[in-house]
Image (cartoon, rainbow, N blue to C red; front, side, top):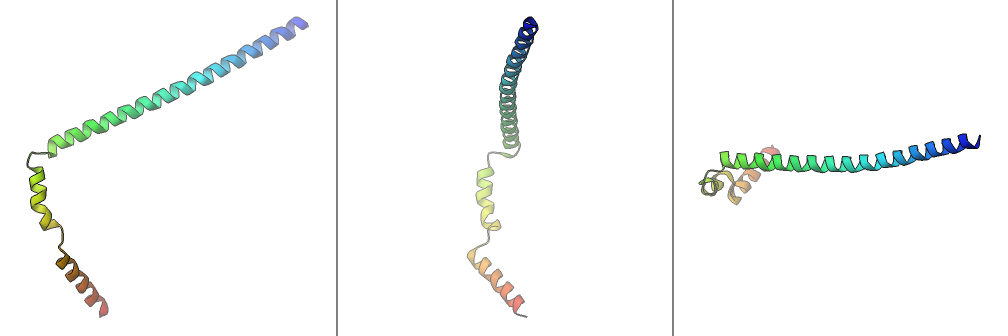
Length: 92
């Protein structure tokens, strides 16, 4: 009976060690996979932004935005006029 007990203890100890090893390697592989995926996603975003910059980043873009900014940004006078109109319409 002592041989059977010893064999059972050796088996359970081996299974315990195997379980710990598999758990550790699984965790390492999950970490590696997540970091690989994160890096791939980062590269894909960078590549997409480069493609968009190529498609929409023509050389005159900076000059164009400086040219149209005064027309799309309201002046202080326009803002106060709008606020006056809102106030006048809410008084009625």
